Image (cartoon, rainbow, N blue to C red):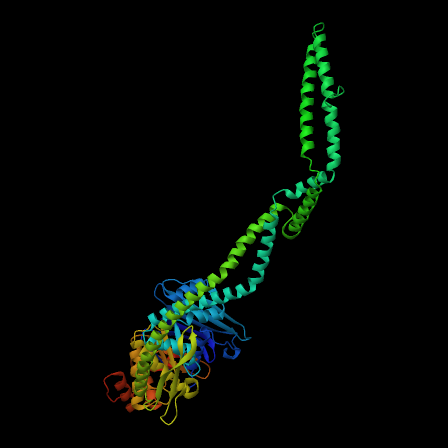
Length: 569
């Protein structure tokens, strides 16, 4: 609820402070007294355009400040906290300033914020319905939301949005998977070819280092074979050879062993000679084995050279070592498995998408039927309210038009149309209704929404809602504003005494030659203001009697009370 609105140096208003209460708050005053400036203050706080011309001449800046009292856990308090604003005991203070040079600033809960943030938070708290403030009524999205609220379609809307989000998600996934399948076909073929090449070569880790040495041995196999033969002959000799190292060492051992009988120091030498003879025999065996292992087949060299060429090609394509090539192959197999699974994934997505579309169609049909019923009910209810608001010849209608494809908000568009006279075909609100008609239409809609138990903005502000209304219709407008005030806080700027008399709080804007002020009137002062609104003068005995009648006070002809709104100055 808006409990206070303060204005400083805004237009004709030097200083003004309004204390508002629950229910219906009425603001009256002479034309040009400054009532519009109070609405301009609210528009500024709601993010409206800040123009230097709004600053009172001679002042450096204009200020508009609002204080809201909200229950704990209210969404607006959460939004304010997210913006860094402070609030205590449920009170939230909003401030907007304009300098005479055009500079504007916004504060929320003592924290500087962008004007857009101020509008976002306060937009949940206040709705201004004036000739230039009917965006809530004219926007297609707002009209759709109002229909859904009036019809109590919250459950159907939520179910549809869940189904729509699922359908859109699967549609996107299928499109991405199909595109990826086409784009990755070449990649899959390349990976399969590369893996086939690696599998044919079947490289072994470290092979790139071993192959050059093997090729070197094969290239010199004949020389190695002959040389090792010479070494083996030198070590063990032939069958009749007496010149081999093994024979010589054995002879030396025997001789040292024989001489050791005369000199004990020769015994160790004999043992060493024996060891050398054993090692020579062992060495000869190894040389002989290696000589037998030498491959003298020219085809082996050719095979090794071919192998090295194959390994070199793999290294050039997939890594600097065979180990890296093998790691690449493992990753390529995993990637190929993913690519080869794409067709199966697409088939699964197509099945899921078909199920999601069936669910969307079902949810959409349920919501469409509920909207048709809600549209008929809203049309009837609003038309009835318009009749009581002095617009008995007006026609209001909610039109639904099926969409070619389901949208995020349903399978049909919603449009409010209006005709002020039977001779004029219904047209969209932006084209078929004046500002005053829109204000009364908004009042009718708010009444219907309030009766349906729909939560709305905390404060509803009406301007020009009584334009062109008089007599019984004026009384009906006042009665309905009072009825709306039983469910919402309502602020109305009015020129009608029948409306002003219905207010729980009556504020009067008074202007002298230099400035304007505002204050609450009660008792005789209020009676005087109602009389002024009725007769254009405060000293009319008949107007005073009528004012008392409107206010439900005892009526007796007497001279006017001395108290009046001019006492503000």
